[in-house]
Length: 147
Image (cartoon, rainbow, N blue to C red; front, side, top):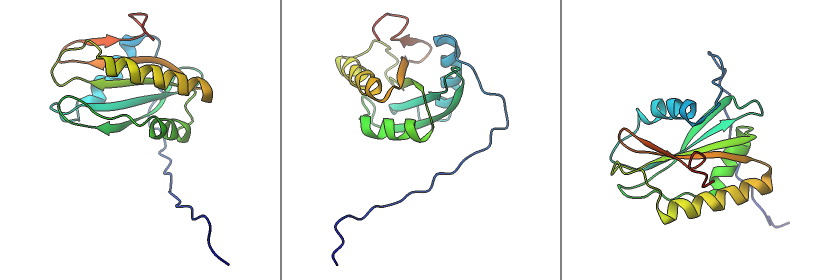
């Protein structure tokens, strides 16, 4: 008998929370969490992060999904939602930084956000915001009504 399909398995490690879940009520509370995540990342590279939330808008986890160069990082939507599903997310907050410090979203930023929102709708995972972090400022798609 021939093997037609071979499936590679992976292990998922569950970490027990040692602190209360942080509730995200507005972009400012998400930004506070994101600033602490980005504090440990290289500032001269672009990094794409997801915050996973449950139905009560409590952050259940986050993951740095993609790291790129000084002017871009590539976001694979399939990888993004695989991680969101594995973390049991019912909604997400997307974030990435601009090493240049400029927070205005590029055409590519808008395009990938739209693509992720569409894919999330099919999976019943709501995208609450996409936040771009600059040096001392940020841009929230939801605050600007562009989500």
